Length: 97
Image (cartoon, rainbow, N blue to C red):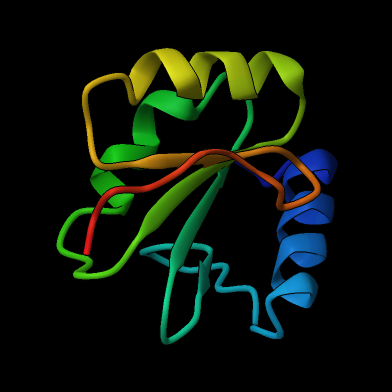
């Protein structure tokens, strides 16, 4: 499936905020020494936990819009995965360390 404009825009915005690069390949879209972020649309939120497996640092799903954020909050309930909005603001803290 091709990358949506909202996904690319959100990923680049958050990567810039965290002074990191945007990884278009497998794995988390944005990785720093301290966090990993997977950007998802409302249609792809369910893929994110798999992409974030194995990281030994705080991990987040960043939704491209409010619908994606709401779905991410539902999907991550009771998990160590945090949620960000499309600006990179933390909505739910990651408890993974």
